Amino acid sequence: MNPIAFKIWNIDIYWYGICIAILFVTGYSLTRKFALKYEANVDIIDDLLFKLVISAIVGGRLGAVVINLPYYLANPLEIFGRPGMGSQGAIILCMIVGYFLTKKHKLNYWQMADAAAPVLPLGHILVRIGNFINGELLGSPTTLPWAVTSPITKELVHPVQLYEALISLVIFPFALKWSGKPKYPGYSFLRVMLIHSVVRFFMDFLRPHSSTLIGPLVLTQLIALGFALGLGFLIWKFEKNAGSF
Image (tube, rainbow, N blue to C red):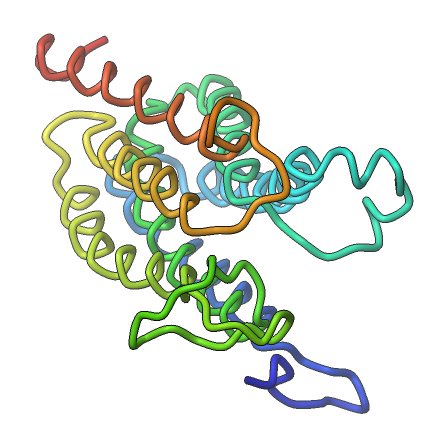
């Protein structure tokens, strides 16, 4: 597929960029809608969301650099010139920045996290579709009937991006339902993040990697596993204490 959607004054407009733009606009609107249900000040919510968008961009870039650290240590200027984002970096930085911002404005962190929960599957749907159109992050070789041809190796490979997009499409309506009426603060966010982490852990087995850290596991899988264990504990703790922690 052609990654370029169209041109404006000889400037290439990429499908990936369009997907990201749709994500930010739709994600911003959805989160704002749910956040205002908690009677938070409109101006505070808008300021918080703007800073979280910046955090997602910065964190995503840092995540891509950390995952490919040996390359960037050898080519430091490429940190600013080479494209690429890491979803885990975006999520982690947003969680950290969100904690301090909600504390500053005296908002409930878990309520705001619930408000943002649907953005996770929505982001994976749009970003993975963009990845597929770009012909990047394809999986390992396979002979399955739905295999696609890698534009790099010309082999038949798993369309891992589409697997993740389809799974996220299933998760998305549940995230909307949970965020609309969470049983307790954190209910939606913890569950969406847990599912996201488990899916990421298993999907990475279908991606070719240059190096592993522990056995067959790569860094992104270790991060996903850490998230899954921590989130599972928090859900158990919240349920045990009727939503308080």
